[in-house]
Image 1: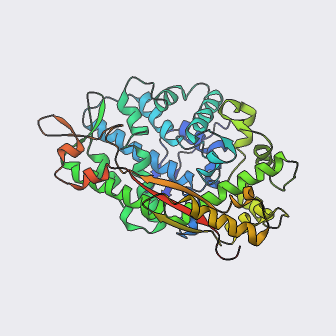
Image 2: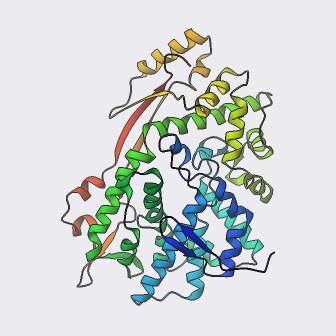
Image 3: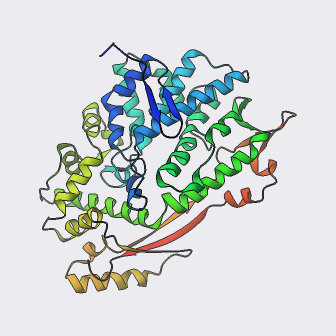
Length: 409
């Protein structure tokens, strides 16, 4: 391992200069597992809607670490005891929280690997790195898993007010140009405190929280669940599922070694040995784009057309409404496709499908956001606020979509 380090500074377009606090963090950033995040897009296929959305998970992870540094300083200033070991563990845990993301972020979880969330793979990477770094990540892993006795530390990593959300809303707003998501994350963190081992917000920060939750709702409808992003991600999931199906039936496809491995094998969480993790670490967005460029000329009707749609941004039509679509709508589009192109019913389902998406800016039932008033009493935010909109933001809204081809594939 390289022992000669420089405590570098990153120039970030959101926060300005981000400093690396110590040589261990530097070595983790330099590690090939973390460097892979430079090749994983933060927002998946959203660049097909917002051309500027090409920022990466690498960007985001460094931003989260910067915000965690600010949170530690603020909490210490307010008298919360945080040891040097705990501080370092918080930086490591938030820096590596997304290290398990596959190509185009969430698409991998529904296509190439089976029922394995990126958080599970992040933990596997952290455990592997812990071996490489002689147990230096043990406390970070404990906090990441929610097993450390100081609960507020886990809340800084994963909660409705964590550093992850505080960074991605502001960062995604910046790179997409969608001003509605531009929250003041540093002001928000300045309002942090800890009461009874719980992360709370001081009363004067209540309007910052309202802005944060409103921004989250707007960003989900306007950006993360934008209908074009939605149909593009569904197409990517289906093209990978089709490629896997073809491999299982003896059809060889051009692709990188890492991608080919996951197409040839059924990999679930329990199959992630060190060897499989090493192959996963070689997989990034470039493998997928390179494969799509090849597959758009393949003989298979489904693979060819799905790949062509993504490469040339000639996507399926998508309609969204508040009630589920009738099965007859699906059958009508499937039958038209079968009749026109003489394909099977199973093949038509790659091009005609329905689904649902939901948006809930604030979940009262999970980890409620607590506001602490001047007398020291903590209240759940919807009870502490005079803003009626917060009750609306806590309701889950579900919308339904149907996708089908334009007149001609």
